[in-house]
Length: 315
Image (tube, rainbow, N blue to C red; front, side):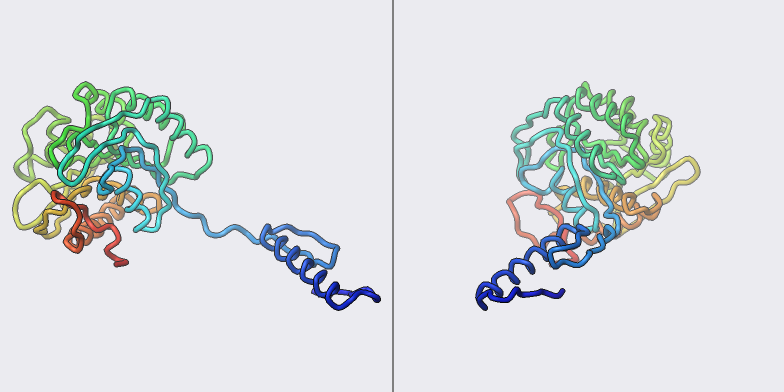
């Protein structure tokens, strides 16, 4: 950039005016505007950066930070996905248990979802704790209206501590309103049984059978999580219309498992938001959650079931 200094100006005044011109030029660069005149060169507006994958979690808030919205957002961040959220309920809880639940009004759940979709290109939605039937209706209506590409439904009914997180009268609404909208649902063994009013599956044949019965409720795939099972390996089963795939990992000895189910389902959503096919997203999520559980004992947080280590790759 060239500057002309008018004759007769003092040196200090000239330097001051050049400084103002430079600052103005930097301001134009910062805003990416193309202007000419006043000693400024034409600036070509830079093209936007590569699109950032976005995932939306619709779930409850965990005041202890280990599960729910907090676990989902940590998972998204750890896996390179921008996370947005719509909160369905506030919980008062810690590593020992849940002491209170305050449901968010259904109309405000709708407002949060609409605010996100109206501004972001949401690649995948993860649904966790929905708390009540009115929230389920609101979520189902919003998703039908916005038609996201991928929906991962984690049918959260009971916390790790054993506390109930879904009203009993809302289970039917979960089956009939949300499951048909899901790309994949991710129940653990007790949740799969509860959705079907059946005993907990005890072997591979029973798990696959329950998976197919859940498919009949309208979702496109089912991932039955095996963390509540027994044996040296924790085996998850991905069931769709064509296949049943067993995904095994060593069962890890730790009491720090708070938020495991939330984080696995949000890791699947992160993979889908990044453009991965479902099986690859599930495999990637399984590997990541196993590492997060394996690193959980690096934490000494609380006096009950502590959290997994979402950022195990970084510290």
